[in-house]
Image 1: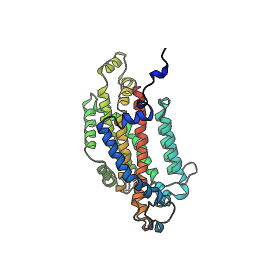
Image 2: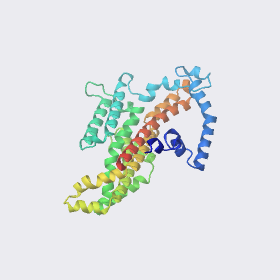
Image 3: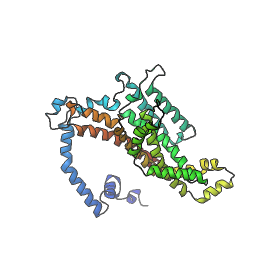
Image 4: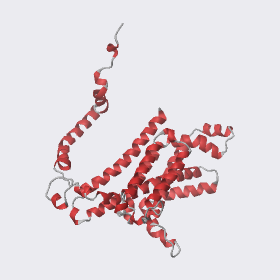
Length: 356
């Protein structure tokens, strides 16, 4: 009888060697591209490491940074709290830290499939309200902090998380309305979706910040952050609606007929049969829209809100740190990249579980 040793696959097709051969040198084009990338890295990576690590300074002042050839990461370390929290009161900055930790906890908890039940949206609603109360103050013995002082990474995350949480159900409702058999509802949803998708987000932010207050009665004002939040929600919901509509159209007609044969009404049919299948189908494009919306929150800098990008720019306006924009913007880009990477990785996990 032949031993199992004789039936093992060749060494070149398994392990690290097999992965390299399959992914980097599978054919002539991939091999050539891999070699070109390796050549580029060999030419640029050593000098970048020298600049970013070896010759860099981390805790010096601006005068010392002007005398070196490496990166001046001191522009980040010396101004980290302002970049992250902006004009939020210094002694109260533990509150945005706590809010960010709560957001992270909700996101991690929501990543487990066993947490997907009817109580999850309620938990998110309660959590977002609690985060808003912590940031705003005036309750639990916390001093009140005006929203004009909300800035930095906390404002970026609040605009994106609150916006995405509100835009998703709104987009689903718009998608259902666009497929409605009632002409009035369908026409209104079509007009809304096509109108919003036909203009850039920056124009909606300008409308919310500049034009909208002109239509309010004298003496009535709405917070600028709320106006920007509403613009982001309206813009994102229109794109989500089209993605969800595609998922609804992908459901076979037999699923609708089967639900109707069971005697389910429209609400039960959509909640129990159609929407769960449609929303699972469109996970990848939905997450792509959410990632774009997360990055687009940086546009609020144009209407005077001090998000992460704006606090970075204010730091660079200090004469001591003028000329170190590369380091500062690399740090901001890293934060945006990590947020987008987490969302994209989460969507891949969901898609993998869906088809396995």
